[in-house]
Image 1 (cartoon, rainbow, N blue to C red):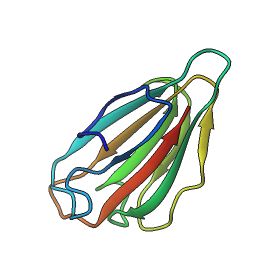
Image 2: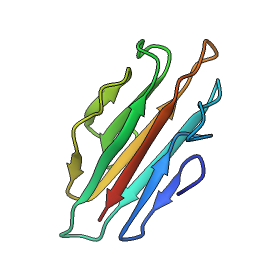
Image 3: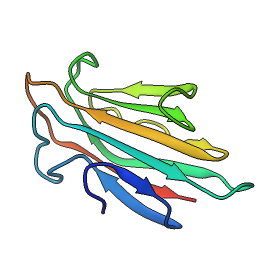
Image 4: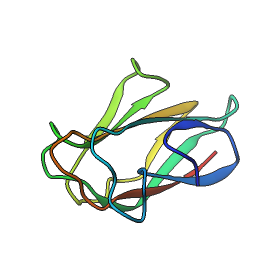
Length: 111
């Protein structure tokens, strides 16, 4: 499992909200970039997902390629997002506000 954010280039692995399996802290921000070689696909599969229900407070944002790439989804609450796949790389951001916390998330990735 990786620390809060980073570049993920192994063939497969996991990443999680800070403090997982305990609740995540307030005012956290983590960015993971999952990059594969040309011709391959990057995939993320959330195994557990429990954030506050208000996406203005705590959320996971997923984009293709980088911070300014096309938005694939913004997720909060406790519904596990569908698997996400991109042809080159996925940019995943977790943000928590100062208002409260929840159980967090863990996700597997593969290249």
